Amino acid sequence: MTGMNENPLDLLPEVLLAASAVLGLLLGAWLPRRRQWLIGAMAGAACIGGIVAAAIAAAGPVETAFGAAFAIDPLTATSRIVILGGTLLVLALAMPCLYADPRETEFYVLLQLAATGALVLAGAQDLLLLAVGYLLLLAVGYLLASVPAYALAGFRKDGPGTEAALKFYVVGALLGVLMLAGITVLLAAGRATAYPMLRSEFAEAPAGLVAVGTLALLAGLLFKAGGVPGHFWVPDAIQGSSAPVAAFLTTIPKVGALAALYRLAAVPLADADLPWADLVAVLSVASMTLGNLAAFFQQDVKRLLAYSTISQVGYLLLPVAVAGRTDLDQEALLYYLSGYALTNLGAFAVVCALAEAHTIDDYRGLARTHPALPASLAVSLLGLVGTPPTAVFLGKLEAFSAAFDGGYAWLAVVAAVNTVASLFYYLRWIAPAFLARAPAGESRTTSRTAAVIAYGAATGSVVLGLLGGIVLDVLGGPLAP
Image 1: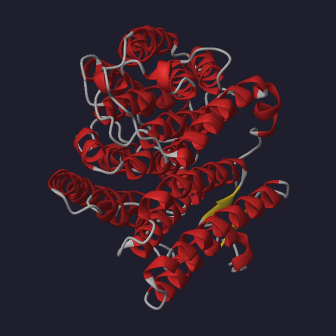
Image 2 (image 1 turned 180 degrees about the vertical axis):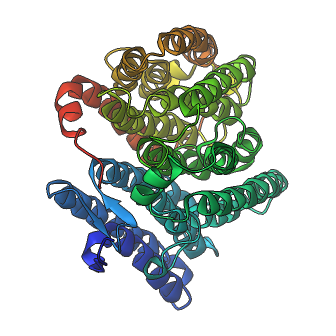
């Protein structure tokens, strides 16, 4: 039995973000409307402090906290940095749009709570922490990553936003209850909640009981990741949300959910008598194929990126499918998640910069008036395809290699075919921006802050790709015991 380690400093990134949310909620009730930006600045400072704390913790030994319920290992450290860094970029995208808004503070608080939930999902290695929450975290891992997101989706209180929030909530409520039921079944099968104990118990537990619980748990986590079969909410919620919220929903929860899925595959389910790898491989193919097919003829740019994110889940599931079967799986997943987060946020930054451009046709001739923006868009969209030297290229290459090495060569081939197919709908967006003429007399209003973030994210995606060998070397290491 592992002794209780209740040092709050082990959870410093999570504590900083949660404390900033609570303090921001209190201060927001007293600050005048034109001073609400201070809450956003405090949230940004909490993200930066959390990144520093996560980097320092990553340099230390692999350990667990709070009775081995929370893991502090390379998987958690990388997820922390990606989640907090992504949240920082979303804050920067949202602050100019929200200045002096009556509900500005609410947005910053909800954003931090949702990000905290993603952090909890990434480090949880206990079923109770994953779903019910550890008492000292004062949060529900899965629910904390969901409930604030429902409010964010409908934050604008307009027709599309309300519809987005409602669909998001209905699907989330259904799959959330299913996930909790699955955890109950797994508790009955394994007679424990800690992952290391479940690993030995599942090896001897009734296979049918473990299979039912695992399927329900998988459905809940795939809802947060936005993959099949929990993908139904994604296109409507992303299209109806504001661009900064859409950027957040397609990036941050995905990191936490996929990290949680990988840890489940690598620890408690590693010795279970289940066709886990085959199931995840099928869901991977379904996600990448459905996302690509649905994106082919989309005109709305946010809806196109929504289907794109569904397809990206399919590629990201490759390392999860072969977890524990190869030495490449962990590095492939973490590097791909890092590259995807930066590249996807870069694409959404361009959407934020051109707030009045909603369809592909609205980008016609953009290169003639704002040449740097379509260049950033091209780098981001071609990066999502997996074009060298961007980070997603190396991430996909590592994921394909992990699939080959893990005995799933057919899955890598299907993923490669889908990658080539996805080039079509990304080029449908890029080509008019460079080749077509802008409508006569049309003027485009751009957000300077969002444009700078788009330039930085596109550059960062290329730099991360060029430094891939160095970065991959630091992403390895054992999971927490």
